[in-house]
Image (cartoon, rainbow, N blue to C red; front, side, top):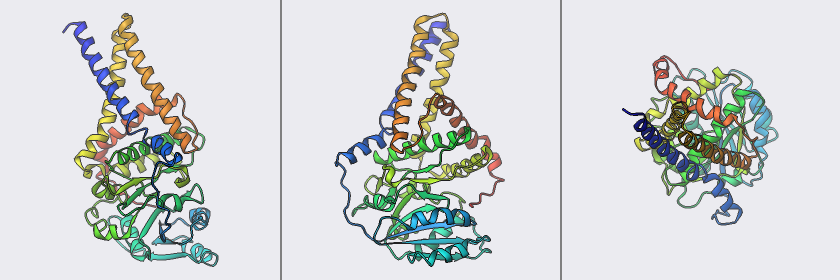
Length: 385
């Protein structure tokens, strides 16, 4: 095969992968920005009613976090809501902390799951117990190590419920601290949110995060809860959306007023384990979901690979070099702008040249988890804390 034919093949792959990449950035990945602008202009219909809400938080040995974050949930600017803590066999001071808080906050309730309870997915059981204990139709979920960013969290999430709405997806962010791991987690979390919110806005919801999502109690029971997923340890949030989320019944809430913040993992090992647990549910996603979320990293990998090959092979060909480097710069500038504008929406710190590094290593980590990592995953028993 002649060198010119190789150039043409590589250039064709480069251009095609670039078009796919720009398609992702200009369509689903700008959804948060587009939606936010429409909301600011008053072009999005929100309900003015404020129905009673049940906030459900599952906790297992989360005494310190509950003491730190729970008052922020209990002091929301919302007229009628209850907070239910599902104490899943905690052996710390969770129960004592809740009892002390109940002396101040009369809308705080606790329900307990015995320590000796044995089930594959404790989180799904805990959520089911919390749903059964809830007295209200609108259910809002977060985690014990989370805090709402503002006192308008409940109000802003609930404004999306109309007669058709069954699921509302919010952004569950992490505290951004100094260091490589914290920046990696923040970038990963932001880009995942840009993707799942973007596809939901386009009418193809495929996941949500349990740190910040809402749905109807009647929907949960009509769908028989997690009946189809009890054999999987994880997936108490994304599998429900993947199976039952539709264009007409799922809405997103992109405002930072509805954002929650969580404590990030401190080490790469802890973050990798969390990533492994989250990705363990991808195998049972709908085929359409797997195709769309797989297309982006595939086209990204081909883009980087062909750019590198063209630079190496065409180092003495100014035209080939200009096309390769020009394509790389074009994609980076668009990516840089959209990611940092979205980060600004959530009052997050901006990302610099680290975008390139994160953009390369995160798909490699995901690919490893979904291939070689599966071998080790079979021996891994996932637990939630």
